[in-house]
Amino acid sequence: MAGTEAATVEPAPDSFEALRGAVAARYPALSKRLKTIAEFALAHPDVIALETVAVIAAKAEVQPSALVRFAQALGFDGFSEMQRLFRAQLVERMPSYEARIRTLDARFGGAETSSGPLNAFIDISVGALERLRGDVDPAVFARAVDILARADCIHLAAQRRSFPIAVYLSYLLAQLDRPVHLLDNFGGMLAEQSRAIRPGDALFVVTFRSYAPDVQEVARRARAAGVPIVAITDSDLSPVYPIADACFVVHEGEIDAFRSLSATPCLALTLAVALGRRHEAQEG
Image 1 (spheres, rainbow, N blue to C red):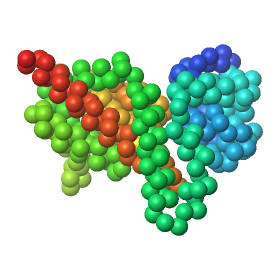
Image 2: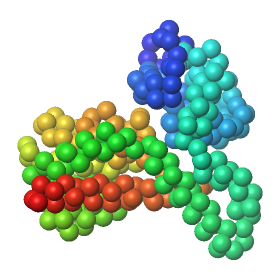
Image 3: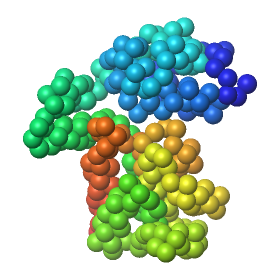
């Protein structure tokens, strides 16, 4: 029954990628508490891999018993069985800058000068960039470039924290002489601006938690019209993840709810450069 915390009868995932897929597939049927854990687990896999149940529960703001129920909902006998997949994934992408940052928390936390916070944000930004190196699937990247290269016009939709990325992409694509349309929602006209999206175009969406409803609506309308979508978001549970033709999940660093924006501009720049090289090759 949807919304219950009963254990699923389906077998437990046998890899981290399978686990991510299982979480996304079963997310709608989870209770509110287990949804909170699912979101936390995908956003902070190193915490799940490295910390004790008590520490994880405190960071996720849930009871330790809820972590056990979450693991069981995915088909595991207990939390430690699920945690092994997170640990295996962490080892595969070593060295982990995020793990190193954990050892520096005490020194940065009590800093009285600007060097402490500055070093902390530099380190989480480096960690996010290192994680990006391992998280980007070459097949997804190639598919995104194909979609953008075929588009008659590339429409960019983003709001709030993600909006600077759309502006940056607009600048980059304009420099490459690519037809580009920034849906900036000026005057509250986002719905009207989105009507310019036509068959043969492509929509590029950037959205992070808490996922701007207006941007979601633009993406849904584009999907219904058969317009291909490239998306950058921060979780497999993002509402744009299942409807995008090419979706990148980017994990930015965060300190006390202040989230950096370092890996996402790097990915946006790389996509623009790859698109530019594609057109140079075609014209040559």
